[in-house]
Length: 634
Image (cartoon, rainbow, N blue to C red; front, top):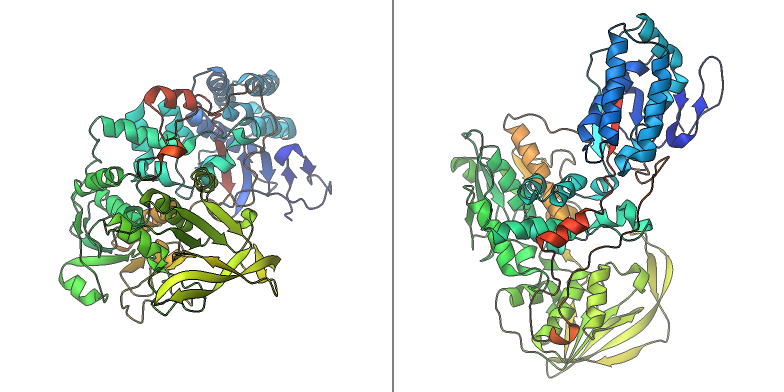
């Protein structure tokens, strides 16, 4: 609950001015840095300090909104330009009372006739300002008040942008695709996502869950549009990254060539730093290289995008495992900072009797995928059981189908509702004939002559939620049963395999590295860490974002500018807006998939992407739900 002088947020007016006592009001607003006197956003006006300069805030808000207006339907752009002209005339002493009525009329017309969500919603706070702070605008007209020239805080987001772990300007790159400007779209994507072809195939796309169209017809195919920009570029030979503005003397060592390490390397190189990555595996890419099968991420896509990063001048030393992090030696070699990004490549134990006996046929899921991707020959068995419910478990199961296993079954201790794997993976597994047994778990491995022949399992029921927020599985007494199987693949999560670290580099009880959440600096000077070795197993886009953030933190440490602190929109319903014009129903553009009957024995990419024409058609569906927030500091 927040006490405000005035609020019109979400169209609910609370006015505590002039002795009125409407009481406290719950206002779910972004959390800018520092104290706020007043704030304007797409959904209304909130005034904390009764002395706030509302006309100046309105003028600044309109200037920021004008930057977002695309002009394609002209209504919004012309309307904002007219509003700015009126306010500029007021500031020069040439305003009149009738201007206020005209301003209100313009706002209503823009909201009613704009074709995109931005135009339909952006000007409501201007309407509220003119209506409820009329005296302040009259004072501006009479010359008793002046427009302040001071800078205001500004943030631009959208429901999809806020949901994206890397904060990509999604409406922006989609708009460029819509206008057949694929090169510019790719440039915009690469600002925050240096592996667009990889992420365009593997991302869990939380942006699509946040898409405003989701509740109208279908979410926009945001992931596939990102892939389209990368695919068009690849077909044209691959556009290199830009060169640094100037070279710097300092060098940075990065341990691990996964998405976090590659992102940090690219961003640091763009800033002019020399960068060397030390990678223990024979291939760069981390889990993207050895943890994701080709049917989801073809190896040539990853190698192409890594090659573009290498062409920037990033050195990658493969087959170079850092057993012990010796910062002194690295500094002797000329490295001024270190970024630890070793990922989480060690599988967790599943806690069953016999898993430490070394039975032939009991395999760790991460190692199974790694061996497969590194070309180790895997002999298919008649029956395989995969334990787990995440994407690694699904990747193992679907790979087994392609390797020639006759019967593939997943066993998961919770229900379908709690299963963490993506819907696409689960549906793909079902199409390929993989069975999923819910609410059960193995408790003992059955072996004969040192080989797995089955598993003793027990049924589960769901109890109260645990620390993950999901209901805890509880064994059902007396429900034991036996499953015959020739192989068991354990895939219930991973943990980091950290190099020997100095005591100053603190670790958590989970075996992850402790870091400052803003800079990703560890407790040891000059050492930073990010990716799965900090968060535990996460998505590729989350790891990539930590690489971006680490680059900012390292740059600041080496004398660059301090990283900007983002505004938090946590708790704000970004999809809600006070008015929406006509939105024509338009289902998503379909892409082709390889027939499930043809997938066995092949690692051909299952999902087809958009060609340029299809991508442009799908991009037309974007509603441009930009949300502009401008605030005056107290």
